[in-house]
Length: 272
Picture (cartoon, rainbow, N blue to C red):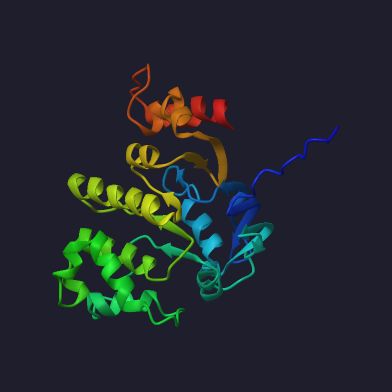
């Protein structure tokens, strides 16, 4: 009688394991954060301003050193390789690209030049082909032939995402893609993010203030407060969680007059 073979569960594409982050050797921002991002999925990281979401992305992307920060404890693995000690360029070469908050496009360069900048780590001769691929997702960009600084906020966000695609990443970290956009453009940008994930199979880690759109797009979500993960679950679990409804989705069974009192007592008692 043959014995059944036990198959090991597939390791996540990105694994953040109990990391702590310190700035200027003194200020501790992250306090034991652990996140797993499975291949091909969209995972969202939610939380109030100052919770440590952007710091988490910078730790993953190798950008902490530019702000005198470091991962002082824990480790980060991408595709089975440890990356928390790598610089940003090497992280990009490994297949992980971050679209930073505020877009960070080069305003005095054209759309085409910005897109080519995203492909600076490549030498495969298919850059022009991929520019056309970006234009298929963002046809509005093809019509813009002037400097990128003259693009609208929504167009600049499209350009920032398109620039990330030019690196041919296996994973994209997106930091506040809806910031400063009209409701109509937010819907359009999130629709394209989901389409890129479906078409290209690119894994995404999404930091976003608009919890409704983020959770509807994601497969799984984490909620951060004060540098810690306080809650996580599938899209369905979080959308139906009364705490999440109350604090992030504008719903819940009870109506409160004072968010401050609720934050300092009820939420922290239940979550922390």
